[in-house]
Image 1 (cartoon, protein in one colour):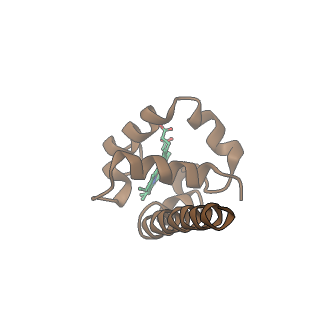
Image 2 (cartoon, protein in one colour; image 1 turned 180 degrees about the vertical axis):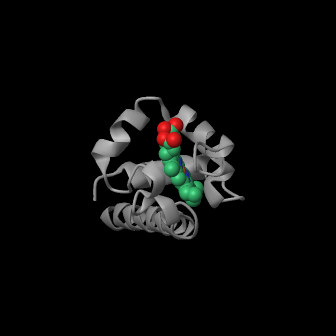
Image 3 (cartoon, helix red, strand yellow; image 1 turned 45 degrees about the vertical axis):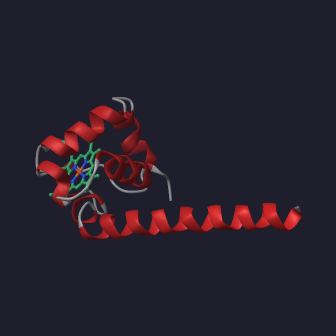
Length: 98
Ligand code: HEC
């Protein structure tokens, strides 16, 4: 029984890691260009204080901003095959303090 639970926990941990890798890969080739250094007022990745007022708008509003573009940020934020769920994961990734 213990082995079964352990196996289950491990496989869950691995799928979690795979999803996280996919998100960082998307981040690296799209959002990072502007959000890593905070280009043109972009909220910086890992700076929770800069993200806090954005997060207050609610996740759906933020996803809309990316899809439609905002200021310097081009529509879709340079990720042309991202789904709404991808954007949510990307936003969470950027908003988490590192
Ligand atoms: C060309 C540069 C650029 C790229 C690429 C970019 N952003 Fe942005 N982003 C910005 C800037 C600049 C702002 C601030 C806009 C403002 O406040 O006027 C911003 C703001 C945001 C916001 C806050 C929106 C709001 O309503 O407050 C979110 C969320 C966001 N970006 C997510 C992303 C995601 C996810 C990606 C990658 C898929 C991405 N951005 C790619 C420049 C960029």
